[in-house]
Amino acid sequence: MAAHLVRMMAAGAPAAEPGQRIADLSQVDHLSIVRPPLFTIDPRQIAPLPLHLLLGITLRLLQLAVELVISCRRGTDGKVFAYSLAETLRCAVRVSPAPYHGGVFIGRDCRTIAAASDVVCRTILGLVPERHHQAYNRLWILWGRLGRKMSRAALVEANEVRQLRANARDFVQLMKRGFPWVSVSPKPHIVLHHAPDFLERFGSIALYGEQAVESRHGFLNQNTAKYTVETEVGSCANLVRAMAVAREASDANLVRPTARKPAREGARRARKSGDKRKRENKTRGSEPQCVATVEQAIKEGRQWAKAVFKEGDRTVKKIFSACGVAVG
Image 1 (cartoon, rainbow, N blue to C red):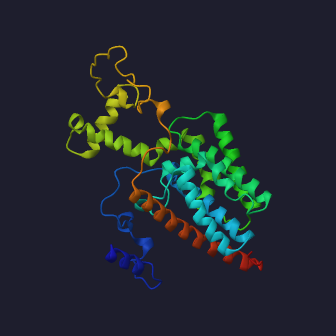
Image 2: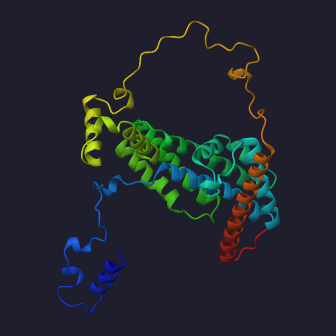
Image 3: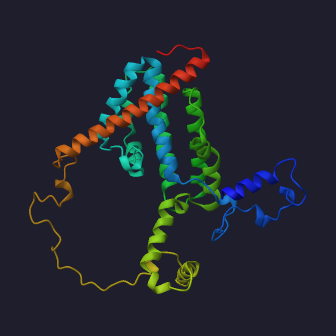
């Protein structure tokens, strides 16, 4: 790779000899990848995975709450608020940052936060002007609609595409009008321009996401013995061919069902009225927790709050100082 890079730099130099210039090189000489990909992809079919959009924008909205408190009050108040927000997420929303995930929230927790966005919005009540609180609450409502639509692994109707396009436009416009210092990073840009077009062209975003691909990969690994040939590409082709013969690309058409006798009447009913196996007897948050686990969750939440506060404080100081506006 290093030798190839040096060769390309020499070929691109103005004093390169004839026959060695980039314009004179063949397409094969341009390539720096020893093993070519198994198949090529049309650039129009490339879109960032919905999981990364979910993680990035959820974190940005949480950081925006910290920036609001810093800009409307003081930096010390913003730091206290960041720690309080982390505790609210842990106790009320029951989500915690994942150390193995870069110290941020995983996809499942991001969906939980969006569903409980009213809890997050209540944390800034009394700390920021009411207009900021209403705009922030509206942002979470719009993002909840967008996140559910992009994460749904199913084909959507034309009216749903139009609704997603309208919600994406309202989301980005509200973010810029309500909070002018927030820059439109690549993720909101993708949500505004590329996600609706991709959804309209292919009918779904999540079906082409990481989870769906990994699911198919796992299914292929489980059925390797049925579709084994000389190459891995051939095995994939046999799998797709079997799906086509089954007329539908679903796991149900390829997995042989096993005969099971039905259970006798009442066999799966809870034996006691207080049995914890019954849904109505399960109280959320009542399960005993290990003290070490709780302490670790608190520690990780504080680390997340510290990082979010530092980033928010740096953003507010940079933008407001450039505009000549005092913070606080």
